[in-house]
Image (tube, rainbow, N blue to C red; front, side, top):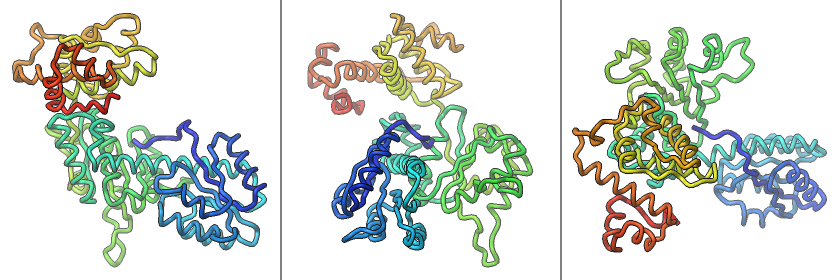
Amino acid sequence: MMPGPTNVKSKVAIIDDEVDMRESVAQWLQLSGFEPISFDAAEPALKVIGPDFPGVVISDIRMPGMDGMALLRRLQSVDPGLPVILMTGHGDVPMAVEAMRIGAFDFVEKPFEPDRLADLCQRGGEARARTLETRALRRELSDGSVIMRRLMGASPAVEKLREQILDVAQADGHVLVLGETGTGKSLIATALHACGPRAAKPLVTMNCASVSPEQVEPMLFGGPDWPEKPLIDQAEGGTLCLEDIEALSPAAQARLLDAINDNDPNGTARHNIRIIAVSSRLGPGTPPAEVLRDDLYFRLAGLVLEAPPLRARGEDILTLFSHFTIQFAEEYGCEPPTLSAGDAANLVQAPWPGNIRQLINLAERAVLQARRGDNNISALLIDDGFQAPAFPLDAEKPLKEHVDAFEKMLIDHALRRNQGSVSAVMAELALPRRTLNEKMAKYGLSRQDYL
């Protein structure tokens, strides 16, 4: 899911040859919660503003040497997604309009209201944060570091899912993302957009179940009484993600199908969008006709991805539990809980009807419980309705899988507790260095990740 505005200060690069203007703008933006950096010319600014600059650029149009228009063109070649706001004199407005056409974020005419400039920086910073988040996700997916960041886990189900995301993202057809509630379908949809050819274009998301039925069609397609740009137009060139698509009324489904099939006289689609439909109801055992009209289903189901349920992910459950308990322990200022062998076995075997969402909730409760000295995590599972078996091992799974999962969890926890100190882990687990190194390699554990 894409992030909303954060409390992190956005950088703002201010470029103006007039020292008074430069300093006054910087002072106002600093008071408004930004982190300004100032330059008296374009050339020194270009040495600092590179691809992925985490903020916004404000530049005067008229400057000696490289002017604002030339700077805009240079910055567009460096990073087309960088928001550039131009400051103009009265006679420069036509030039500023031309700058908007070639990619400027906006412009302000001198003298301007400081609040107007701060508002533009706020909106530009939020847009920049979304761009960088999407960009980072795409890089993570392509280089594999997402294993520890987004789609965590090393189970065959997750490895297969990563491969499918990279393949389907490049196909550019409409996609159905299926899976139980809480399995991360929205993240998969975001990843599909970020890894595909439309990554630089908008990703527009609507949860069909959270919008009142009378507003769904105007919000999607517009209408005489709808004051905003319809979502299908906002997503032009990019991706329209429809979560809980089964909540669309028959009338809305018909209009969506018409929009997909709508071509101009030359046979070209009027809406250049990719639709990612997300559903918790479609899937094995459910006839599509019970959820969507057949013709819409078959238009959307050319490509299908299914998020695996948590119970099918084996030792990923322990990896995720460890990750979330460490996060919550940092938030609450305490140590993460320690898992017993029984707790670990019960976590792996629990049915997890709420999937990852349920695991996150349990991890937070486990940390809060541990703050008062109680580490009985199995009791929390029982509170969630899980009946621990008399013999905690699943007879359908080989014993070796449970042993490996538990061993990996013990080494992972020891590395975290000792911040990557191999000698400390050797002492804690009574393992010789060679044996520890072999086991870390076997389970994909790197000392660098714990420093």
